[in-house]
Length: 71
Image (cartoon, rainbow, N blue to C red):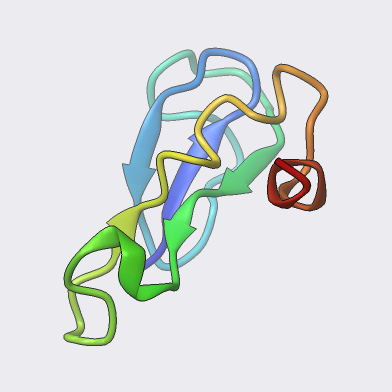
């Protein structure tokens, strides 16, 4: 099941789909998929998805996954 991060309050939660409003701040937000899909995160591929810490709050900093890979 994917992990999602609220673009306004950065609350992170797991769910099949994003809700209409954030479960934490109760605002209508954009939700960023912060699920790890690579083995670097631990148990990827075992059915246990993890949060990719490289993606947390990146959107708040105006960065994208492509910017992160340039490092």
